Image (tube, rainbow, N blue to C red; front, side):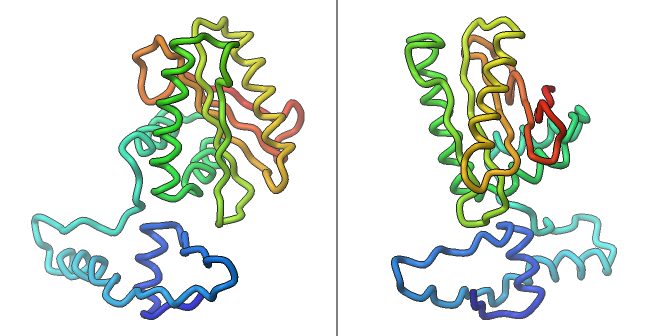
Length: 202
């Protein structure tokens, strides 16, 4: 992938998108990405800091939906097991993928709320797409499940996800359709880097 800009421009692009480069269409070559002046945001911040300004401009940061950011903050603040691996997997999804995931999740929650746990598919999987990091995120909607049954279903979802080609780590985000908790009700991680049974609930 070619880009037009300097190293600072590329750094800001990385901080904002995680290097989620555009994908080539069919067999056509992808044109260079124009990154000129991306670094102005970073330079403005450091110049303001050097000048000891009272109100600093915002630093470059990753593009996240509000809900995605809430999930990441909760993982970090609660000190969930495997929080580093879960955060990395979630950050592997681009801003557009985050929005699509949340939209589909809300539709899934509505279907499960209407039809129940077993009359409709109550989970879907989203991989990281072009980044090829081996990450997958699973949405799991449920209604009035006992903890043991809920966890058994999560374990099954993790096992199925890890059987997918190229998937090495999985985050399951679970929402009880009758709960008002945000941003999730249960979170689980599974990966080939964990000894059997390859999962951890939080």
